[in-house]
Image 1 (spheres, rainbow, N blue to C red):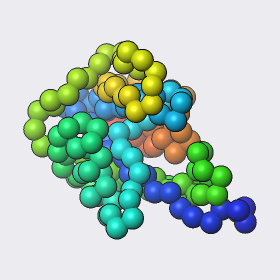
Image 2: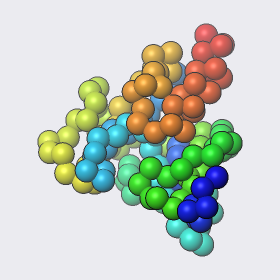
Image 3: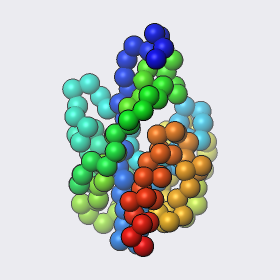
Image 4: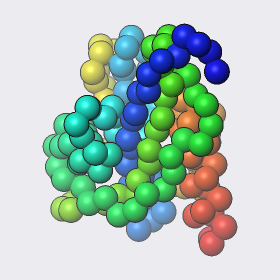
Length: 155
């Protein structure tokens, strides 16, 4: 481990799977780059991981989710991509919407008009068709493989 790394960044993500065995993913333009990831975001000081995810759901979807169970927490060293002195820890929960979806879900990636920071679109992908190479971040790539192991072995 590098002596320069002296803090943690914790991010929390929702794995929302519909009855058709599709998972909701987020295409975003943040920090001047395109990224494909799971919905969620950064945990604030004084906030628990479940509270963080519920807050992120309101911010991203405009509606509440129910957090069902823990799925995965980073179990390897991952330096934070956007901060030179931080280690990234990501926590993933299985979740579901409390009410029918009220936001737009697209059938194409990056379905927004302009690439400006803070834009986002959502789409469903069949779990059987998930490809880790389509995800931007290393921890998400691992989670894609874990999801496929968990859900595709029963189909």
